[in-house]
Length: 411
Image 1 (cartoon, one colour):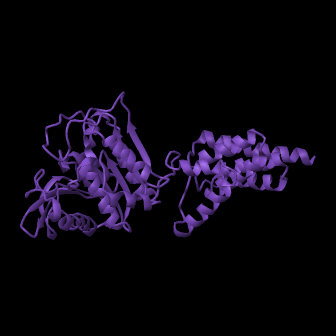
Image 2 (cartoon, rainbow, N blue to C red; image 1 turned 135 degrees about the vertical axis):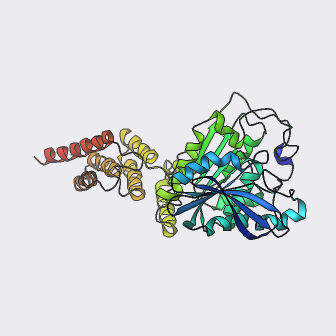
Image 3 (spheres, rainbow, N blue to C red; image 1 turned 90 degrees about the vertical axis):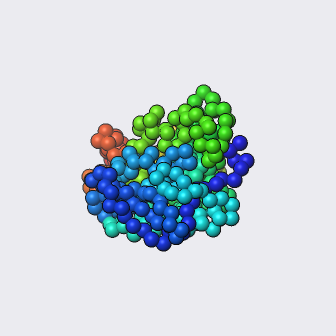
């Protein structure tokens, strides 16, 4: 199995001088020389955005080079995200050989820090809004370790087809609000990467983590380890950045993820139903709403934008109670939804309908009118999950229906 052996990271000696070779690869990119203390030159490419913005650091897998990330890096730069790709020592255009054992333990953290420091030192890079992405065994390990070492600045992770150390797993478990995108394929030629990525996903605790799983009829057979005897295992297109060819939508998924978590809502992504399964199940158990309410209140003390569950999923639970005639449980759940998403016209409308059915007229009117006011203001989306004209119309009709029923009852 892949995980029977230590994960060896190809690394470099502490970088003390960073210089640019001034070789232009296109309008937004330049090749960069990172010089180590022993004279080893590491090649990197910096893709600059047109305006100041966040940054992303991308690590390659052991059987590929930084150039596999070029397409994604260019798209990120075009979207306003400054991006650095690096060839690790002994790979691509970088000099030197990989280090292992005790040398690796001493050099590895300094190597990752050097690449990170170069990125955040560039003009226009928002040094406290950084994303990290990696592919394969070494790329994923490099990414998680870099995020762990700079957790106050790293706001997003993208991990393709790899694994990480015990320290890395512990970091993912503790980083409860770090948005993470996990990608793997069943036909990965280096099994059990599929299970290793599953371990990363279930260990991570962020309710906003997202899983992209490309299914196959069965897992690929084990042949050899990724970091050793490179080329011994024929590529199938299922590992790391090789996925881009067979799944042309994947670069766009990655770019959109970084745009969402670094530009639109830095350090945040919408809560995901699968990722927040334990919370969703808690809501449906007796006394669970009160527990989740307290958890949300506590989370908001350190992060005012923290979300523990998707609005639509919890709303579906609440409306299920309402249809089953359990009005009290419906109101409890829908009040929790509104606490989590107070600016949602949809959440206000759903709660108004529940109050109407329970005979609480004043509260029904209050929330129906609030739903309409949110729609009329046009300052925020109708809900956290959609803002189409069609659904805005549905919310409006529902709120007006509630108000009409209240008026009829008064007559």
